[in-house]
Length: 80
View 1 (cartoon, rainbow, N blue to C red):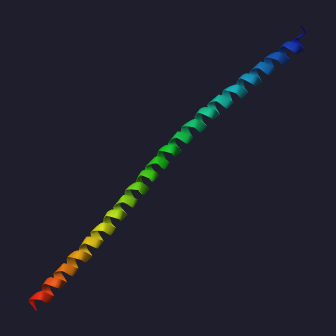
View 2: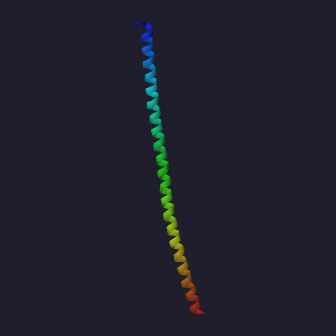
């Protein structure tokens, strides 16, 4: 084989190796970033669920306060 063909094949192998290495590295980085985003989304969703539950609890407590206030008003009217 001539030297030109050997140099061309070595260049091809080097380019191919570099390209595949870059693709593998980029893929790992992308997967890591996706995992981090998934963790943030899970935290966000957990917060949304907790806030929904808290809002329900607040609604129930407000209703109990209204009932208690009506009872107090009724008791005050009976005394008067």
